[in-house]
Length: 436
Image (tube, rainbow, N blue to C red):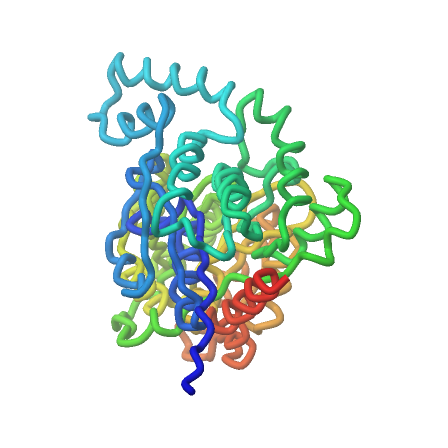
């Protein structure tokens, strides 16, 4: 008699951030869906249909497996409507747009847990309909933290285990972290986060240091026993078929957003110092910025004596950004500035490592610097030490000009951050909470 194989685990992945949205927050849930599907897990993604957050990269949709269902719901409410209107409004801003900004600010003061709260009710309603209704486990990834609230409500409605995935800290973020909830959310969110963590069957985190941060600041006993470190990483398939574009220029490349104290000013100031002290060297150094804020940053420093050596290409599709990393002489990494040691590693760090080019990390002491050193990938310099940044760039240029080797990440160390490996660990976590 033929025996029937057991049905695969069905996962509902609740995420506000998903292609065709662009940006670093999109990549983790996208790769979860891709590699969990290969682990034999049936994945249904529950996401937003028309996000109020800006930015789009439709090329990322090609990475969504054919067997992964994506169910999109509309983000409701006045805040969402204003966000969409601002996204398409003509520039320069007129009186109507200024009114929208004021209305958004006022509404934001009362919205809990964040400005994307209009996603929650729509996502919860979807839980009673196919294809979400028979999910075995709910995995919610944040931020925005409305995904956590929506995931908890869906899990409760389905009677399914809840797994919370932290890409960043929420209410436990250190001073200076770019987290800006409204007044009501600042008061209520710590209690909401504490209750969600107590309810969750498991917690996964992109940054290992967040476990201690959550435990100490929220006062949850034995939280660490259900926490699992699932680091970000790189997808080797993203690099297949890509080749560096030949160049005879010494180019520093930065890929990503600039916000929350994450700035390229220390790099620009270091090259400006070189320009004053040794114009011949500085004339051979170029800076390329790939990301949505690049043109704005270039406009801000338009009077700089090295402005003509800075190229701001704006947003590019993910594969083009990877080609930029492969083609660069040195890739520049700059971290968010906040109080205390660095405990957060940007997701793009692992793609920087996989690109195999030297990395100049402008960051304080902490996990990012430790990772760069462990991989032998380049130089770690504090943003508060402009002379050290200047000297590092000058020495690297001299070595490059004279044909001496530059640092290169250790491939064996880098291979540990292959996304297929970390997502296989996530699959084990999901199966463990499913079986109880």
